[in-house]
Image (cartoon, rainbow, N blue to C red):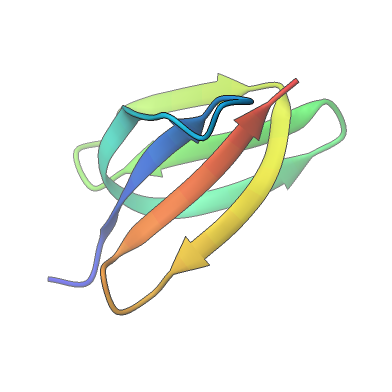
Length: 63
């Protein structure tokens, strides 16, 4: 499978798991909507910090 896990990155650089098995990352006016392969959706006010495609990770900086 090619889904990724999404992590929140705080100001000190600490990472915490936000959502597993992410299939879609959808930018919205107020932030980012993430959708997992299981249909679970989460919205967060923030921006993409970075992507690690080889490791299947999406890093998000919350606002």
